[in-house]
Length: 519
Ligand SMILES: Nc1ncnc2c1ncn2[C@@H]1O[C@H](COP(=O)(O)OP(=O)(O)OP(=O)(O)O)[C@@H](O)[C@H]1O
Image (cartoon, rainbow, N blue to C red; front, side, top):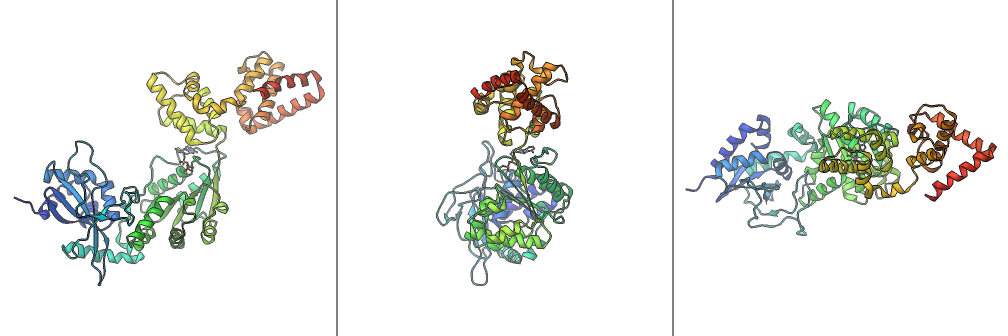
C-alpha cells in the first residue's frame, strides 16, 4: 500500500522533534511542507535556498535518521526550494534540489539523487559552485511547481513577502541561530602579540569589547599573505559571540559575498540578499580586495555598509594591501574604509616567531627543544602559515618515526623547505665562525662571562650579525643570551672604533669578513 506523504513527513517530524530543541524545531522544521512521495523519495518544500543550506549544514543527520526510520534503507529526501515568492500576476516558483551532501558509505536515507524533470538552474549550465553559506548550492536542476498545489506554498510565499522590507526582516528572523561562519579555534588567547601586530590586535580587542561603539568602525586590517589577518578578525567575531550573545556576528569572505550576490541576481532575489545582510550586527568581510572591479557587488556592499554603519553596527574588514592601493574599488567605498581605523599586520620579528611556534607546539601537544624552536624561527622568517606548515611536517615526522623532535631531525625533515634560507649567512653561522676563529665554545657567546677574549668575540659576532642579517638590535641581543639593544649598539660601536684604531684587529675583521662574503 502506498504511503501518504503527509503522514510520512508528520512521522519524521515526530522523530526530529525529540532530537532538536523546541525553538530550532519551530524555526527550521515547522515552515517545511511535504510535497510528494514517489516510491521511497520524499520531497519537502523549504522557503529559501538559505533555509535549505542551513538544514543541510546543521540538521542533515537528524533528517537522515528520521527518513531511515520512516522509509527504511531505500528512503531518500529531496528538497523543493521556493526561489521566487511570486505576486498577483506571477505564481511562486520553486526549484528542486537534492541534498547537498552525499551520505557517508553505509548511511542510508539522505543522499544525492538525479533530479527529475529538470532544467539547468544556472543560465550557462555551469557545474555546481560553492555559492552558499558554506554549502554547495550551485547549479541545481529546477522545475516549476504548480502554484497553490499545496497550501503551504502560498502561505510561505506570503510570509516571505513580508521580508521584502528590510526592517521587517529583522523582526521576523531568529538571528541567534544563524551560523556566524566563524572558526572557533581563532581566538585572542592564541593570537600572539608582537611589534608586528600590536596596533591591529589592540584595536581588534577594543572593537571586540565594544562593537559598533568605538572610533574603530570600520576596522580595516591589512597585510601580506599568511600574517594573521583572518585569525585576528575571526578572534574579534568569536569574542563578541562569547560576550554579547544577542549580537548577530557574520564572517564572510568577499569572494563568497560576491558569489552569493551573483546568485541572488540570477534568482531575482537581490532584496532577500540585502535583507539578510541588513540584519547583521557585526559584519566581518575578509579579503575586501576581491571586490575590485565588481561594480554591482560594490554598490550592494556600499548600501549594506551605509545602513549598518548608520545603525551603529560594527564592520570589520581585511585586505592584502592598504586602502590607498586598492585599485578597482570605488572612491566612495574607499573613503568610507578610512572613516574608522586602518591597521596593518607585518611579518613577525624573531621573538614573535618564537612565541608563535611555542604557542602552536603547545596547542598540538608537541615538545620542542628551545634550540629547535630558534632554528625554526630563523629558518622561516616571514609567513606564519609557512611556519605552521613546517611544524606540522615535524610533528608528522616525529609521530611516524617515533622520535623526539631534535635539531638534527628538524634540519633533516625541513631541508627541502628551508634550503634557501640555509644558504644565507645567519646568526648561527656567524656565531660558530667567530667562536672558532677566537677558539672559544659558541655557548660562551651567549653566557654572562666578562673574560676579555670572550667579550671581544661576542662583540665581533654581534657586529657581523648586524652587518649580514636584517635582524633588529633587539633580536640580535636575544641571540646573545638575551642582552638588550643598548648592549648591541655598544658592541657594534666598540668594534668599529677598534677597526679604526687597531691595525691587527682590523686585519682579523677583514679575514673573518671574507668567510661571510664567500658563503
Ligand atoms: N600572531 C599570530 N599568533 C598565532 N597564530 C598566528 C598569528 N599570525 C598568524 N597566525 C596563524 O597563521 C596562519 C595564517 O594566518 P591567517 O590565515 O589569519 O593569515 P592571513 O593574513 O589571513 O592570510 P591570507 O592573506 O592568505 O588570507 C593561521 O593558522 C593563524 O592562526
